[in-house]
Image 1: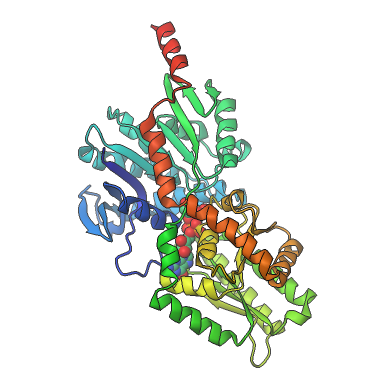
Image 2: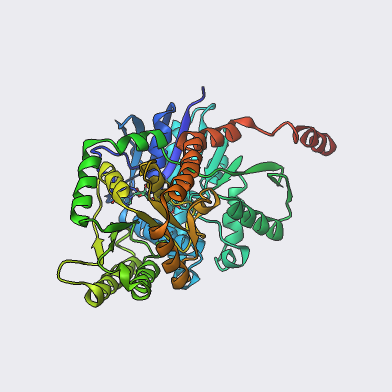
Length: 473
Ligand code: GDG
């Protein structure tokens, strides 16, 4: 079996069971790598005075890692800059928050070059290379320019924006063209894949048929491959001591009230202000729910060096304070707003104690919290998932109560409906969703991607490719 080299911006292995600062990509990639003979390459998260390209090799939590440190200027321009102030907002449809600067683009190009330069001596001819996410879109091209003929794939964890949005990026053609050096590009949903096709067919002289884009003599396969959980492991974690303790602690403190839970990195794409507003409307429209429910919002801060993230933190504190001031009584607080993370097992106990799981991003590539909430439920008495129609997960979890996060009323109605849902309906919806996340787990996701990466052209296209080649010859 060929070796897998997975590359992502950050390498974050769970060394102490406290993975609260890790995003969805790190959680899923570690799970996928544990079951394969692979190595995970990327930034350590540490800074160095001057970039040396020195690699630190480790093995942690069953995963072999190879990390490099970056200079402060790299972190500013590439990570906080182009990745998180330009691409992240743009790809989440937030042109209003998208910052365009040449320094950012320069830093992005430099760090991608540094990744390629450092990684190159590690690559063997048979290695499969799997690049992850928006931080490293041009990395495949950098490797090809060093004459690597390995199979190289790319997976985008976030949405792909419509062409008209993408075109607000200077040098958008250059960036997207660089991606056509990959053998496979994976997307979370068909919507993002279609948006990619719309862009390349409008901008480049390329042929696109079936799931293949042909450009400049190369075929790039476009794959829809929704990311999943390590579902078996997660379902087991619900029975751990830490999970049971967290579940009991929350249930005891709820004193018979229904818990509505939200768990999100503090990020504007997660729609937290809109969610708080919907909850406020719910309490206004349904005074009978006051003192009967509360919202537990867990939101560990992320990307604290980026101004828009500092701003959302302030706004949410103000909003939760205002809602609590308006509705609280001497022994009831409507919103428990928690700004720090919990261990994975604790989180599972919390999910299980909650009657409603509220996952209402304005735009999200997938959203693993939605799947985690389903995995953590007791099938005999499951809670209800209220899910944004703009989360990639909505394409799979159709039995959730699907809401429009831009409509405060729709969200408030969805929460009320979830709270009132009879047991039989809850069980039926949960059963279908659990089946979906069990079948399409993280192992399924990595297997599907690896099959596409190793498969080469599929049998239907082979005759056509051979014909094209002989015509050219
Ligand atoms: C990107 C895409 C896509 C959160 N709080 C705590 C905690 N978390 C964990 C959750 C979950 C992860 O963080 C968040 O994953 P998401 O999928 O919701 O979101 P992103 O970080 O934005 O991830 C996303 C993902 O990549 C994978 O492809 O689904 O669309 O944006 O696992 O549990 N974990 C712990 N304590 C916390 O307080 N332990």
